[in-house]
Image (cartoon, rainbow, N blue to C red; front, side):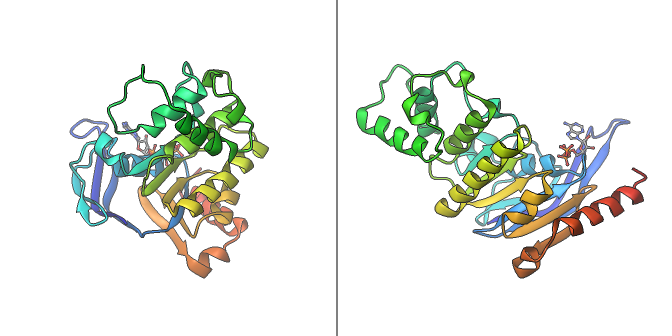
Length: 257
Ligand SMILES: Nc1ncnc2c1ncn2[C@@H]1O[C@H](COP(=O)(O)OP(=O)(O)OP(=O)(O)O)[C@@H](O)[C@H]1O
C-alpha cells in the first residue's frame, strides 16, 4: 500500500515563481490496485509519481510504503521496491549495451554488479524465456545492441527489465505515449499481463483515455494538484471514454482553455 498524507509541494519556493502544486494532498493506493491517472497538462501527474519515487522532495506531509515512513528515504533505496517505466523508451534501457547485457543489468538491480563477469548458461536461458514472452523475437538477438531496436521493442524491454526483480509497485509514466497506436496496444496488453501475473500494485499516468478506461481497477483524474475524479470497482468498470472526455472539456472550459 502507498499512502500520501497531507502532502505540500511547492516549486521554486521563496521566489517570484513560487507555485504551490499540492496543498494537503492525500492519496491511498491499496495493494493490488491498478490505478490509471489522467488529467490535463500541468495537473501534477508526473510530480505525483516523482514524489512517490523520491525523485523530488515534499515540503510537508508523509509518504508511507506498506506502513513504513519513506518520506526522507533516498530515491535509489525506494526503487528497490518500485519498477518505473518512462515515456521515452531510451530511459529504461542502455542503448550501447546488448540485449543480454541489459537483461543482466536489470537482473542484478540493487546488487554490486561486475560488468566483466560472464552470464552463466542457466541465466541466459532464463533471459531467453523472459524475452520470448514479449513475442518480438528478441530472445534470438541477445548479442544485438539495444540502441538498434525500435521504440516499441525497447519499451517492451524496459517493461520487462523494470519488473524482473521482485518489486511491489509499478509506476508507468505515459509509457505508451511515444509509440504508434498498434505498438501502444501491444505494450498495454503486455503491461496488463505482467501486472496481473506478478500481482503488482500499479499507477499508470496516461493521456490515452481508452487505456485509462479499459485497463486497471481504479481511475483518477487530476486537475491543478487535486483529484477531481476517483472511480473504482463497478463504478470504474461502467465508466465510458465519453464521460471522461466530457469532464475533461468542462474543466478546460472552466480554466478558459
Ligand atoms: N521542476 C519543476 N520546477 C518548476 N515547476 C515545475 C517543475 N516540475 C513541474 N513543475 C510545474 O508543476 C506543474 C505540474 O507539472 P507536472 O509535470 O507534474 O504535470 P503533468 O500533469 O505531469 O503534466 P503533463 O501532462 O504535461 O506531463 C506544472 O505547472 C509544471 O510547470
